[in-house]
Length: 232
Image 1 (cartoon, helix red, strand yellow):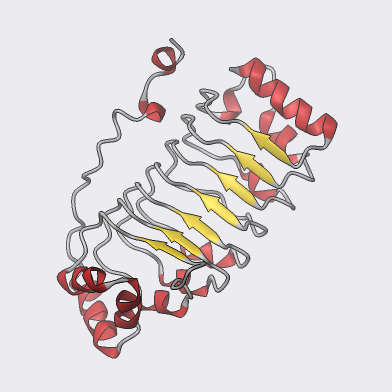
Image 2 (image 1 turned 90 degrees about the vertical axis):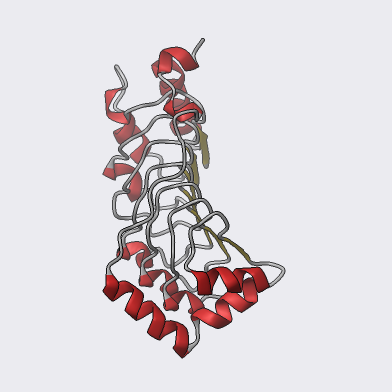
């Protein structure tokens, strides 16, 4: 694992490549790769635009990676992350599906250029109201979480139409939202923009109800298997 990872980082640096593919490398901790200061080396890749860590066992993402000045696409799907470092101001696409996120921080609003956000199959219990500030967002994937309501601010986004994507199935929605989903996505957005929903949302948040239990069994996913098992 360490040799292939070292080779990939060094090749990207020497050739000044805009993309780095580190999928399925069995990476558990970027700080523990023997003989290689991966975080420092990756941070030197000033022209890197695409970074793909899909399907590893990463639990922590070092701050240095968030400082890449030209990074546009970051794929961290199928890992064990529950938080991200601040930064990533240049991102257009962020894929953090199949991880352990329970919340999205309010400073997601600082990703002002974001067009695609995929957080499906996590443990999200809510979406921050600041998500409504991502005015360039064209795709939002939140299916397979523990969401019961949507922030009214989501209604400010343009996620309806042939070039937009909003996926939200397999969540334990409260009945009024579930009913709107039965009618179609446009009805959901009309509803969350309404004064009636804003009132109901406020009451729901004040009630501070217990979150729905975790339902996703992640134990069988590749990223959950021990490295010795995966490498057989």
